[in-house]
Structure formats: C-alpha cells, structure tokens
Amino acid sequence: GNQASAFRQSTASYFQLLARQMMQNGQSAVISKYVYHCWNSCGENDCGSSPSSSTPRSILSAQCRAIIDSISSNRVVATFYREMLRCSARYCAQKYTHDEELSMTCKLPFLQDTMLSPLIANEELRDAIVNFIILSPPSSFQHYISPTGCPSLSSVDRAVPHCVALLLHLACISCHESDSDAESESDDPNATSVDSYLSHLSTVASVWSEDVFVSRSGVLQQQFVTEFLLCPLRQNLISQGDFQRGMTSDGTSLASTLVQGVTLRLDISLSQPIRMDGMRIAEAMASLLGQHLRFDELHPAIEETMDGKEEETKVDQEKKPRKGRNRAIRRTRQVMIDPDAEYFTDESDSSSSHNGSSMNSSWGEEDSLEAYSLDDDEEDLRRVALPRKLQDCF
Image (cartoon, rainbow, N blue to C red; front, side, top):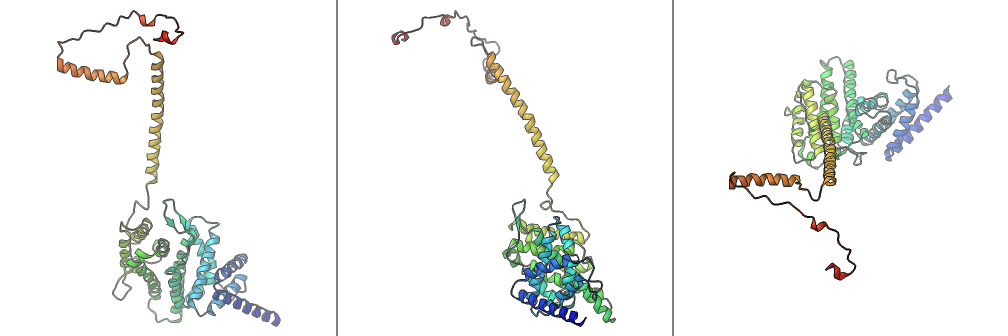
C-alpha cells in the first residue's frame, strides 16, 4: 500500500514537472491534446461533484489544477487555457456543425473539470484570461470565406470566446457563493458576483467601442471580440437592470458603452463585416431590453429572392416557345413565297400604313394615284441557248 502510494505520488510529480516545462516552452497545444484524449477516454463520471473521489477524471482534473497552481505566470496559464479551448472546440466540431450546438458542447464537463477551479480561486487569472485570450487573440485564425465573399471566423474560433464568457460567468458566481458561505455578513452576494462579471464585460466593451480599435484592428480580431460580447447578451447571463446600471466611476453603463461601439460600426464607410458586427450587437441589445430590432442586411429576404428567380425563369420559359413559333412562321413564309406574286413584310406593311396615313393627310382623300400595270409577257423567262463562248455572253 505504501509503495503504491509512493509510486502514484512520484508519477504525479513527474507528470506535473513534464507538463509544466512543456507549457513554459510554448508547447501548450501538445499538452492540451493529450489531456483532452485522456479525459475523453475515461468514464463519464462527474468528478466535479465529489472532489475527493478516485475516478480517473477526478485524478486528471486534480493534476491539471496542481500544474496550473505551480505556474506563477498568468500569461502561460492563459495560453494553456486558450489551447484547451481550441482543442475542445476542434474535436467537438467533428460531431456538431451548427455554431450554437458547438458552443454548448464545448462548455460541458471537460472545460469545467480542467479549467473552472483555478478560475474560481484566482481573480487575477480571470483578468489574465480576458486580456490574453479575448483582447489579444492569436494573429492566425482558421478563417474561411463566407458566401458573401467576406472573411469570417471558423466555427472553432467562434466557439472559443463563447466558452470563455460562460466559464467566467460560472467562476464569478461560484467564487462569490463560496465567499457568502464563509462570510455571512454579505447582504447580497449575487450582486457582488454580477459586478465581478460585469467588470470583465465592461473591460472588453470599452476596448471594442474605441475608435482606434474599430479603424485599425483586423476584421477577424474584431469578430473574435464581438463573439465574446454576444454570448452574455443572447443567453441572458445578465439582467436588464444590470445591463443599464452604471459600472465605471463616471456612471457609464455597459449599455452606453456598447451603443458607442455600435454607432462607430454603422458608419457606411467601414467594411461590411465590421458593420455587421455592430448590427449583431444592436439586435442582441434590443432583445435583452425587450425591444425588436432587425437589420435587413443581416437577414436577407431569401424567400423573396427565390420568388423573383422563379418568376424570371417562368418569363424566360414563356419567351422561348414564342421565339420558336416566330421562327417557324418566318420559315413558312420563306418557303411559300412566289417570286412573281406581290407580297409585303411586316416592316413594309407598317411603313406603308404609316406612309398611307401621312399621304392621305397631306394630299386629301379626293386625289387618287394611277395603278401600275402588272401585266407581264414573261419574255425574260423564255428558254435560250446555252452560251458556249465568252463572246456569246456579251
């Protein structure tokens, strides 16, 4: 028993040392990949409900917490968290293609088991997560070209800020719930947890609403930050009163800050993806405030477009047979023409009718024209001898 316990402790120490060195050397993606595979291969027991349990997932979660607690640099931990988020989103994207299902799947037990406890215990780590993951995202994104021709974030990169917003919300609530249990003097612990979460949102919203960020930041980076702000608005993680309550020293609310950013983005001189970010935030704000707002640019009338295409197709189909009938009539007229008979084309009919009306108006109805004799002796059609010499042709 003692030897087995000593072996487990030495193994755990070696694993923590190896993982810590790889994270500090910039190999967080490798550690994240193997942690996810190990966690996924374990049973589906909830390790968060009983921290002292000896299930494989609880042991792995305890090792992750020990590794994170042993690293003094919050930047290294934030980088590790970012790779964990992207690893989870990347593997979940193979099962779920819809963005909402993907973001909901990424927030499930894996991220909570491996990342939530350190966030609850360390407020500085939560601030580092906001600064290093949301406000300083990686320069290379797995972006794709949308059907409109504009670059857009992939579903994997769009899920990362959603998961960060959800984890921060859970961490703030859990942190102040534990504080309220330890300190019964607190009158309203929920207000404290909301203030902590609103402070993170206000930090991101203030940067998102700056003119320099709107005009000089890349399109993908702005979309990344926009996704972080959309998550609490769409999922009602904050109430309407908290959204309009003043948070800064000058009494500026989160709603006022976002309105400033929306106004900057709706400038017609900006590119389409940036303007659409402002429209998406505006619609989410209106929904949270109990109002209805809908931009046609975000929701094109697909049905009307399809109806218009169907009508154009019908018109084209109706025109094609008519052209065929007109060609057949023309061919028939060409075959039935008699070289000696008098005939008139459509142009000559219209021109003659027009000329006739003009002559009648100028000469009067009493005047008449002498008819031209059409008698022909057909002398030009008589048979002649075939010329055999050039002189006969003359």
